[in-house]
Image (cartoon, rainbow, N blue to C red; front, side, top):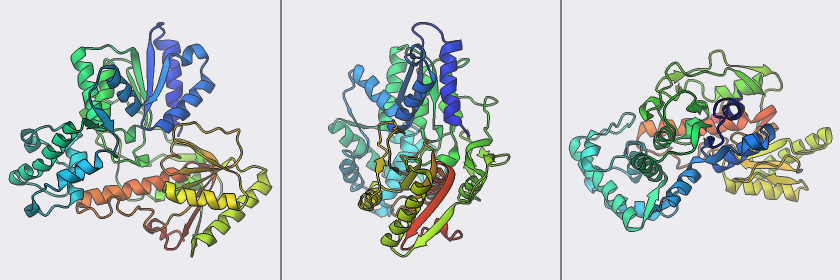
Length: 440
């Protein structure tokens, strides 16, 4: 519906018409590095240099890291690699009589401890566990807390902090130092993927007032685990929100197919209420997405190759086509086989904007393709065990986590399909994903 485009024009407008002082700055932030690179590229097409220099575009984790470093932060921020063994050590200390699996502790940490910045057993006793499917009495909470306490000790001993810790520390630093940042406003894209701590920090970055925050998002496209109520982060959107209902990118046929993936699932409106698809429509029409299942990888790649040959003969170029898959490992297999079959390929990189002047079939993971658009999209390898991904919440003992995980996996497919302006081809090999059961 043009959310990112609206945000880009909003940033330009604020600099040109509202915050016109020489030292005034606008922060434009989003969840991932690749989206920030794409936004920066598009702003450059729209804004003259004197306007562009006043808009800082950066993903939030990178901003936090740079800010803390300038202020002598004594911890290294880890995004999963270095803390993994520490977490395992802490979970090994879990009381055996509780019969809670390792996944429970990680889910409790990510959905209760970190969002609420719980730092003591006393705070944990009072913490809200709304949305958690496994109940804990006071005695059990005390036992469970021992794991989190041990993990905190290990983090301190190793000089490490998780991303949520870093955001919280940055917020506290801003508040305690009464530091005034140069930003007069913050523009946020892909809000549905931002965490509670992220929005608490964003709220601290600029004083509350007119034109302070501009936030765009769509919970139907939430592909990470964060579900946030903005009102609980000090951000009041009551009576200040707009819903975009006209889809300018995808055909009505593609929209209908993508929406069917989320049929019957309750989707939030980013502020504690529920969203729906009432009034949502596309202006364009085209072919209904084609879904093909193959017995093995060779049959699938042969079909995709024929599809690309036909497209090349028709259009003389393949740069308007993107092949999308769930994992980098699977994507590398498609890349290798397409090269062997004589096709030019263009892998879309994580921290660089796509160069549309270069030839080749675009290749991207489902996470990387977010925010981009192409004439045609091939969603390949939609297999059982890949979509949804084995081990990603599917085996959780908490029914709430299991259900939310499936929604996130469906959202990945939804996002991938809605990158296409004209045509979608969905393929699988071996046993197809259960998400395709009614479509083959």
